[in-house]
Image 1 (tube, rainbow, N blue to C red):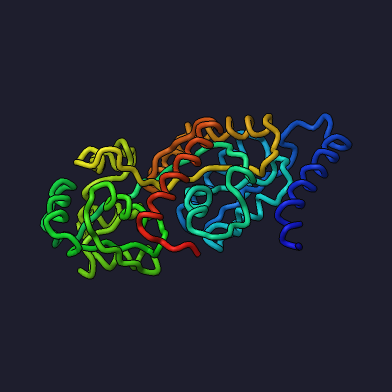
Image 2: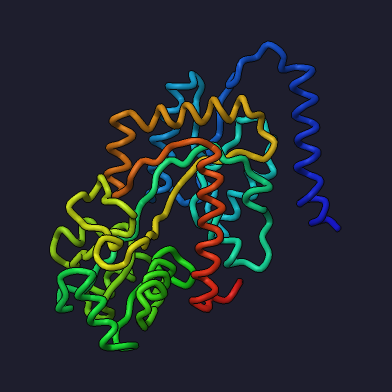
Length: 326
């Protein structure tokens, strides 16, 4: 009974309390009137954290109020997400969510403490980092077409690494195998670094990661293609996998800002405009490029449709790959 009260009645109570306080105390105050918290569902030091901090800095200047980052990693990004879902819908607590948080987790977990499109109001997509298909230099292929020919001629004899079951790299590989109709073996590790090092050590043949630029440009890995539908601004010389014999193939890790459900549309509009303006600024664009990503932006409606489309897409991939719900 306690969990039922928490899950269903707490958000309702917060919305009523917020509306009451706004009516009694908030008249005449222009949003935002004080600091805004941006919750990052990943630990400090990673790509999501770096992206959150540069966005917070730009939004602070645009909105005229401090936007600060609070890291709440854990439970497959669900800890921070639940924290924001249960916050007052007043525009002062936001979530830097990822594709994992909003579109992948519903198919990975039998029970979730939040529902992406019921508990959140999408504000704007910020950036996406496409997976990169890379192979060991010892593998005698120079492009995706040659790799597909090799895999089709040798079913079950080649493998790919990932940081674990249900990770973006695992699902990128599963989608590749499904669309290309090839049989490749998934080798899960416990971290991205281990998954990449395993190729350089000759333990596995290929991987689908989004942090391979330094390894690839040093010659320790051979990048064959990028998993976006068009070439990335961060790596324009690398052809897409889609243009090399697998039309429509796309596997990107995206990040976007959402607010608690019930956040007033005027505040969502102001936040959306601030994010889109931030994405035109050089420092923001340079940071995204350094993270091997591409800026996205756009409307809350477009973000909503992306969440829906990717939820269906990754649900099918997870089912096909036989990933058991946790």
